[in-house]
Image 1 (cartoon, one colour):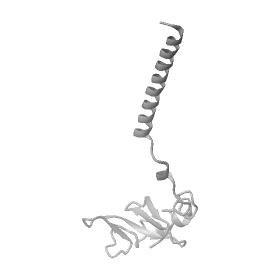
Image 2 (cartoon, rainbow, N blue to C red):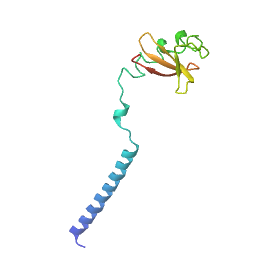
Image 3 (cartoon, rainbow, N blue to C red):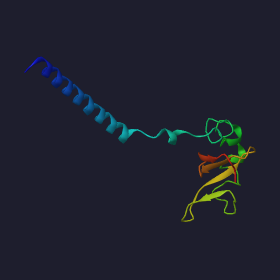
Amino acid sequence: MKDYQKGYWQGYWSGSLIGIIACIVGLYIGTYARPACAQVQSWETSPQNWRNSEQNWDNNPQKWENSPQNWKNNYNNYNSKDGVYDNIGNRIGYETMSPSGVINYYDNQGTRKGYNPYGK
C-alpha cells in the first residue's frame, strides 16, 4: 500500500469512529433529555414568588384560616363550602383563598398540596 493510500484509510476510520460516537450521543440526548420549554414557568406561577410561597403566612397551614382544626375546613363539617372532592364524591381536602387571591389546596390533614395563583 502506498503512503497516500494509508492516509486515506486512517481518515476513513477516524471519520467513521467520530460518526458512530456522534450517533450514540444523539440517541442518548434524544432519549433522555427533556425539552427546555417544559421547565420554563412565569414568575406569577412560581413557588419562589412570595405571593405563592408556603413561607408566606397567608398560605401557611399553621394560620387559623387554613387549618384543618378550623370548623370551616374540617372534614366532619358536611356543610363546608371549602371541601374538595374526587370524581366519586369522596372528600380529598379543602381549599382556602389568601388575601392576595391565591387559592391554596390542602389535604384533609392540613398538608398544602398545591395552589392556583390566579384565584377563581
